[in-house]
Amino acid sequence: MIGNQNAITYKEIFPYIKENKAWVGYRFGDMAFRVSADTKPRKTRYWVDENGQKWRSLGNAMWLF
Image (cartoon, rainbow, N blue to C red; front, side, top):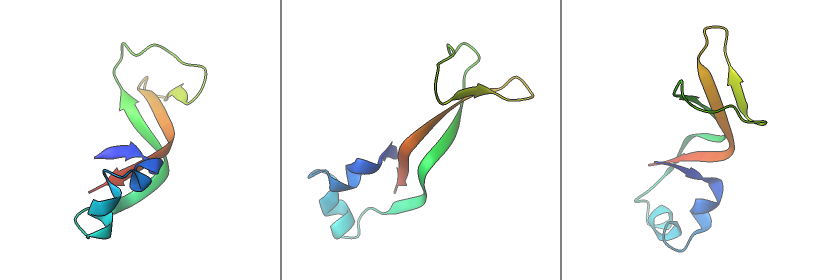
């Protein structure tokens, strides 16, 4: 699951981490994601690479397993 970094403090999530039933994954922080061609441009955290692929990023994302 990909979620907000603050999720590890949520009362619904923290018990799973405490009981070793969920783990924070390898990537934590600024993560980039490819988005579909019809994604509308944004002012921040949006770019198009040299191949025309559109991208967005999240600065506070994490993997949670």
